[in-house]
Length: 263
Image (cartoon, rainbow, N blue to C red; front, side, top):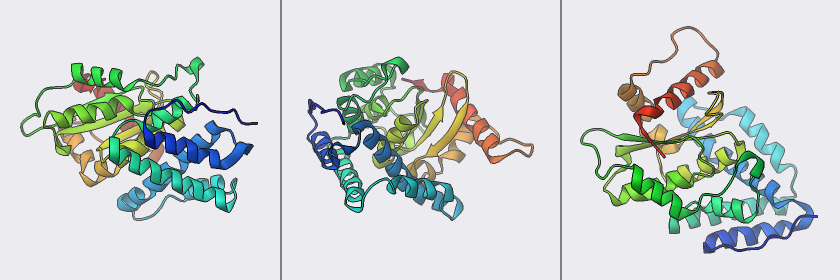
């Protein structure tokens, strides 16, 4: 039987989100629902971007989406749509790490893996101490979180930078994490908040990279071109597989840690 969750949370939309999850009943573990939701939502957001880049949807993602949905009844599938609507409304209202609050309240973190929710005041404090006071003239900065969790620190950085006069063309964000469901959650929130970002499913210590997800604003703002020009990173010259090229690009991105603001 699924564990009863105490709804000790302040964000009203996060409360609505968890209450809506209760509609699934006791047949599903809350953490499994959370992981399925973020995977489905990430695929929904990623496929239009795949259309922009290659002109077609990713068939493997389509199969994964259908496979997850088949686990649920028709009325239960509609609950996932309701959850997505609540998330969108919540991010529009508060622009905070709403999925992180849900994740922590559901107690889905792995203490053995060092997964702990970063409180918003700490995320803001790190951003305040690390980030520049004014936008660069005719240039941009990059902000990297190599253990992003659900994106709390980068979302806090966005708020601080906006208050300091930064526009979307002044900053690019890079997020990395080893846990796939946290990568999904970060990607969803950075994309919905309109942040130009690359989100990596990677082991930032070993350099192993499994996937790279560009946000809509990353693609729409032609950030691949801007980043290559700024950091003079060339594409692989020899003929390699797509996976090898993606890994090399991701490694290049992570290597520029010393050239950007790391929070």
